[in-house]
Image (cartoon, rainbow, N blue to C red):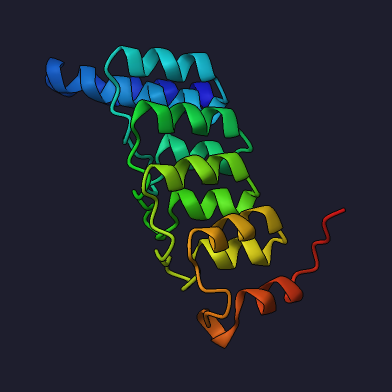
Length: 173
């Protein structure tokens, strides 16, 4: 399936001016490597000049793709490469929200160190704290509280982080 998309992308590139086709080709390869989980390919594409903030059709960068695909190592690689840590997808989900949802404490810590916005809200009116609490990711919740997030703040649907956590069916060992 991935080969099919790659072939279609390459065909489409044949109609672009050479300089633009080269840039798009690198970015398309970067995104394809990310979807495939190929960290070496991602590193190669970046070294060849692919844009670290390249986005797929729904506005996700490689950083968000990595987090949604359970690839925290690739996410850290993209943070180190200089990806914009506040670049949200079309639905408003930021890398910090994705890390909070997945429970990736080290990635969340790295994002915060690079200036990730803890107050950003997506289209569902959720933020990193509600994602972390709602998934039962207590280590990320504690990290966010340590950055100064108000423990008693009221979020979407008039719920606090504790209420989001209590409502989850997911239980951590």
